[in-house]
Each structure stands twice: as C-alpha cells, then as structure tokens.
Image 1 (cartoon, helix red, strand yellow):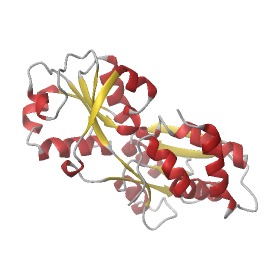
Image 2 (tube, rainbow, N blue to C red):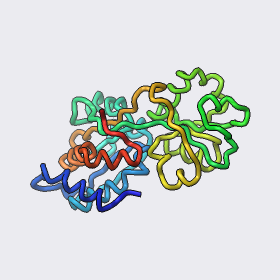
Image 3 (spheres, rainbow, N blue to C red):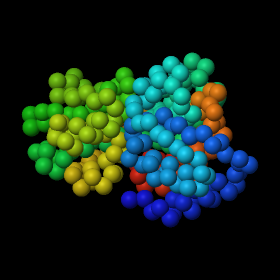
Length: 256
C-alpha cells in the first residue's frame, strides 16, 4: 500500500518550486494506459488534495486511447505505456509537444497463480504440456503485449507457444485472465504483479530485460486542452525524483 503521508509530502515538495498562480476549474481528464490503473488513483488523490483540481482518468490500451484522442475525444493529458502511441498523437497534430515526454519505465513479468499447477515458473518451462494457456496483451494495441511477443521471439519460443496464447485487449485484462484462472500464466506488468491481490494469489519472475526493448512510458498534453496548465503540472509531477521513488515501489522505474 502507498504511504499516503509520504505521497502528500513528496507532492507538496514537487509543487512548491513552481506553483502556478491559478489552476483551471475544469476537470483534468487523463487518458491513462492500463498498466497505470493499479497505481495512479492514489497519485490522483494527492494531486487533487494539493491543487483543488478535479481529475478523472480513463484506463484503456494505449492504442485505443491514441485513436480516441486523434478522433477528437476530450482528454487533456495522454499517459501511454510507450512512446510510439504519443508519437501518433503528435503526428496527427493533436499534441502540444514536439516529442513524447518520458515519465517512467515499465517492467515485464511472467505471473502465475499459486494453485495454477505450474511447478517451476520460467520462460522455457512454458513449453511444458502442463502449461496449456498463457495470457498476453494484444501486441497491436498494448506496449506490454509487444514486449512479451519480443521476449518470446528472443527466446525462440513464440512459434511453439502460439497455440497456448490467450490474447487480451490490454495488460490489465491479461492480468485478469491469469488471476481468474482463464489462463495458467500471464505476461503482465510489474505494476499489476505488485498489487496486494496478485501478490497474495500468485508469484512472478521478471522477464530478462535484454529479451525486449525498454518499455519507456511517455505522455503528451493534448492540443487545445482547456486544462493544459494542470496537465503539464501533472506530467511534471510524475517525473520529480520524490514521486518517481514512490512509483518505483509499485513497479514503474525512473527514466535512466
């Protein structure tokens, strides 16, 4: 669980150096990648308490959110699970930035329930006949799915495991499939694996970092946003050292 007092104190420090003269009274609307769902709500609560700005977040795959923004969905800030989908928004002329602003780096893990029947959790062990189904996010829509596919290709496992793969829309759904027993194991984000429920229900191993490209998570302020000042401040807050340390405890590493 988050230490709420530590979070509020860290956020107060982050705001003190550059507090705006006035905050928009409009609701700050965040389009957030699914891997942020386990950790962003308390961060949002702290932001609201310190600034008085009301925040609403919508959690979906990065690809889905990028498409919605390009098609005119009324978001103020896009927090994606990689840099490619914010770049699509930029290329469509829908972002204030000239390039995505990285705010964290994600980690891919392989997770299974304690009662799944998987004896020794390992990438190579997924070949075992005992492992009949493996959850993975859709590589076309979800950066973590793309990373998982890259890892399987790197380990020369993709062709052998393809019949076992259960495709989820996003990384949160992949975690749900694995936790519910609809899949015996799942490639999920470390942010999901470190939630109290999944820590209680199962265990995980980290996929070797060399097996997949870095999952650099980035954001952009949506062009012509009615709440651009608050959106920029929220994005800056995520990158401050104090808040980065707190996010790292829940599975998102600072940008190196």
